[in-house]
Length: 457
Image (cartoon, rainbow, N blue to C red):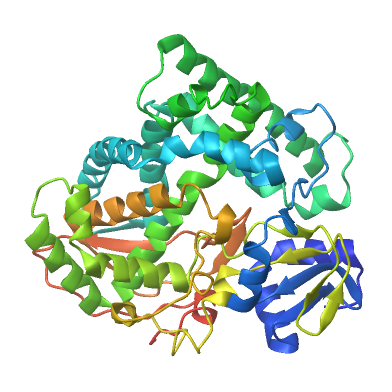
C-alpha cells in the first residue's frame, strides 16, 4: 500500500476490504503488511496460515478492542463484552456456558420456529415480479432471528433494533470515526456513541421483557438462564452478547441466502435440478431436519456459494501474544493478523477453476478444516455456525418450493462490505417466477461482482 501510515491505510482498508486484499495478494503473495515496512497489521492468506493462527488461541488472541475507541464505562464499551472479544480462560468458560444454547435439541426447536416464519413470508412473495431479493431475504432473516433468538414477533420496536444494529456495524468502521474519535456533535464518532447508547437501551429492554414474561425455548432464554458451576453471564456480557447476535446473525444469514439465489438464477440448470430434488423429497410440506439431510444438492449449492461469496470475507482479527514467524518474516509481539475466507477459498490447488460456480465439485472434494472457513476454524470456530447453516438451508428450500429466481435484463450487481458483511451495494433485483411459467434464459450481470465470480455475459 502507499506510504500513508498505519492509521490512514487502515481507513483505506475499511473502505473496501475485498479490493484491498485482492490487490495485496496479487502484489505481494501470501503475506503482506498493511503499511510498507510496518508489522502492526499483517495479512496472511491461505490454509497454512489459517491453521497456524486459528489453531493456537493462546498465542493469537481475538482482537479485543473496538476499531473505534470506546470510552470506559460507556455503552460502546458494554457492547464489546461478548464471546468474540474474550480470550484465554474467560473465553473458554463463557463458551462452555453458551454451548447448551446451540445443542441439537435447541437447534431442532429453533428450526420449528423458523419454519413457521419462512412459510408465511415466502408465501407472500409476488410471483412473476421483480423485486429486491436482498431486502426480501433480509426481512425474512430478521423475522426468523427475532423468533428463534428472542422469541418475539417483528414490530416497530424490533424494526428499530434492526436499524440500530445496522447503523452500529457501519459506524464502527467509519473512516470519520476512526480518524476523528472525539464526541463533537454531528461527527461520525458522536453518532456512533449515540447509536451505542440507543442500542444498549433497546437490548436491556429486550432482556427485561424476557425475564418478566418467563424463559422460553428461544436463544435469549437459554443465555439468561445459563449457569455452570455457579458461573453465569454478567449483565454487561448479556447485553454485549445479545448486541452481537443482533448485529451479525440475521444479516449473515440473509446475505448467504441472497448470494445463493443469485447464483441459482445465473445457473438455471442447477436451480431446476435442486427444485426437482425438493419436490421429490419435501413436496409441499414444511421441510424437517431429516428432509434437509436428504438434499445433498442443496448442501453443494450452499457450500459453493459460501466458498465464492462468503458473507464475512474477513475474519475477526488476531493479535499475537508473542513474537512469531509467518513464512520468511519474523514479526513482533502485538502484531495484528488478518485472515480471509474469500482469499482462502480461491486457492486453485484445492478448488480448480476457483472463480467458477461449480457445486458438483463438492461431490468428492476433500478439503481440510482450514481450506474452507465460512464460519472460521479451530477452537474459536463460530459457535452459531450450525444454527446459521440450518437456517440458510431452511430459507432456500422454503423459497424454492414456491418459485424460482431469474435475472432480469440489464441487471447490475456491485459488491460492498458494510461492517463485516459483504452485500450488494444497491440491492439485488431478481424475478421470483412461478414454477409453471416458462423458464427464461439466464443472463449475465454487469457490475463489480464480476471481479469475484467468473460469469458468462
